[in-house]
Amino acid sequence: MKKEPVVRFAEDSDRKQVLALLNSVFSSQQRTDYKRDDAYWNWKFRGSAYGTSILTVADNEGKIVGVDHLWPWEFCLKGELLKAVQPCDAVVHPDYRGRGLFKSMRRFGLNEAELRGYQMAFNFPNENSLPGNKSMGAEYLGKITWWVRILKPFNLVKNRLFTSEQKDFQLPGAYNLNLEIIDNLTAQSKMADEIITIRRVPGFHQWRYAAHPSRTYGMIDVRAGKKQTIVIFTVNPKGSSREMVVVDLIGDNSQKTEVAKSIVAAGREMRADFIAVMNNHQFGIKDLWSHRFLKMKSKNMVVTPINRKLNDDVKSLENWSMVAGLHDSI
Image (cartoon, rainbow, N blue to C red):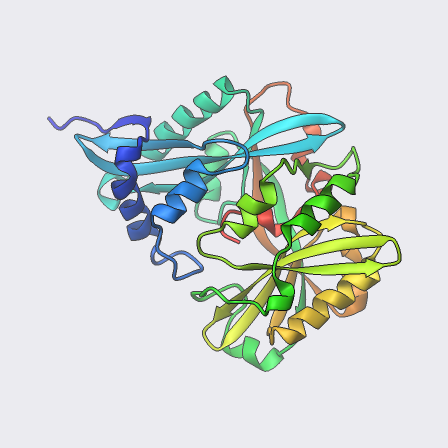
């Protein structure tokens, strides 16, 4: 009788097998042509500004047949620290599916997360993985609202929204990230206590954006008098089209008109077919309809309580300062 795979924490010696399994399973699903390599391992699993990930594997006598990853995050809510993990990079080899390995690895990881003081897990499952997340105790918050400004309608007929494989895009130098400006503005900005916001610890922007192994991010510095807002974005070529996605917003939340106009102007300069911005109540993104942005629903969001004393506010999308940079694939 064959032994069942052993669920354990991943070690550095597992790196080659873990990356090979991820690349093999995700090659037909992911939105980019990027292959996970040592740089990805170091950035995603070991280099987070919030500490080392919880990386779990299923080991069948030396062969890695399953991987589950909990990515660490920190948020602020009502003046308190909220520690969270984001499940991502979860795969099981096709020959070992149907044995409950996914649930075994996820439980193993969540138990460790509880021991480390994490209070919740949050993630963005697709329609196929949503039932599995719910069966593990995840609570469904709904579909995230996006605002989309279409700049080239004809190209969108040829290239469906948010589909097809993407490649990295090098931005014009004027849009290069300036970490000093970003960090200085972050230090000066005050977030609303009642909104769940990213805790931007020292090194966060360097890690999340500047050091990303496969994506290039740019910034727009929007200033009007003493007001300042930084918009961080990425541009993704998809076949003959380009999409521009706003991934983060920092600074003054009263510059709604100036920010919207600056985003559209940058999108035109990037020759983007469309611009996508996550709905964000803190920055008044709900007002983008007046700048010819259309509303659409895309990406599910779930929250899994780890700590029984978890604040119920996290279970409503309305309470989150939503930015696409929270999602590991954008």
